[in-house]
Length: 326
Image 1 (cartoon, rainbow, N blue to C red):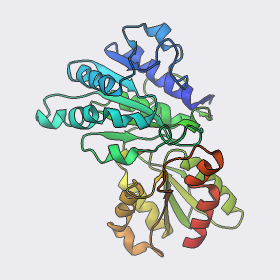
Image 2 (image 1 turned 120 degrees about the vertical axis):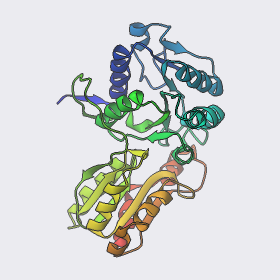
Image 3 (image 1 turned 60 degrees about the vertical axis):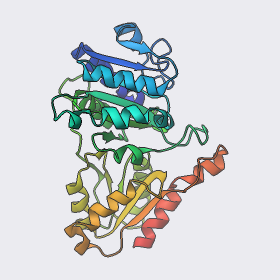
Image 4 (image 1 turned 90 degrees about the vertical axis):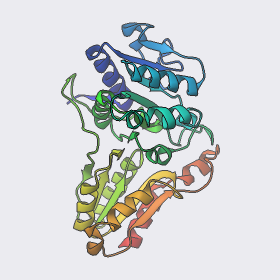
C-alpha cells in the first residue's frame, strides 16, 4: 500500500467527496488560492473553482453560520477554521444553531456540515493558537467529534464525516500533518465508520486509552516497555462522539489496569468521561488499580519551546504513569 502524509489524506478525502457529491462546497480563510494555512487544500481551488472552494473574510462566526445555513437548505458543507482556538468565535453558530437544528424541528431537517480545525501544541504558536478544545464541543448535544491519529484514519473518517447528515467537528493535530502512513488508493467505499475505536497495539498488562497525537507517543512508550517485559495495549478512540464504549470496556477487563492519556488540560478534559465509561461498567470489577489520568497541565500553552514540550504528556511522563500502575 502506498504511503502519503496526513495532510494529503485529508486533501484526497475532500476532493474525492467533492467529485462524488456536486452539492458539496468548501469554505474558509485562505483555503482557495493559497491552498490552506497548512497546505491541506492545495489544488482544490484549481479543480473545483471559486463557486465550490470559497475564500472567506476573517470572521469565524460568519463562516460557520454561512456553512450551517447552507447545510440546512440543501447543500453539504466543509468549513475550515484556521486554528481550533478560533472555534471560540464560532461557538454561537456551531453550538446553538447547527447542533440543535435537527432536534428543534423534530428531525425534519438536517445539517450535513463538517467543521475542520487544526489544534494542539508543538509548533511554537503560543497560547492562542495551540489549545486542545475537544471537550468543549464534545459537551454539546448534536455535535459529533472526530480526532484521527494517522493518515489512514484521517481519510476514512473524513469521508464518513462528510457523508454524515449531522454536524461533525473534525479536529486535526497540527504536528500530524507531515507524518506519513499507508492509505488505500482512490476508493469510494473506503470509509471508517464514526463511533468505532481502533486497537493500535494489542497487549495484556495495561491499557492506554488515548487519541490524536498522543497515540504515536503511547505506541513509542509501549514498544520501549516491551523490552522490559511489559505488554501495553493502546486503544485509539478516534471519535469522541459517538464513543465506542464497548472496546474500552473490553480492553479494561482484559488488562485490569487503565491509563487515560490526552494532550488537553486535565481538568475538565475528555479523559474524565473516559474514566467514567470504565468505572461505571462491569469492567470496574476487573480492575487491579484505580484508573489513572494523564493530561496536559492546567496552564496556557507557553511560547518557549522547552516549556511548551513539558505542558503536555511526554514519553517520560507516560512511562512513569504506567509504571506507577504496575
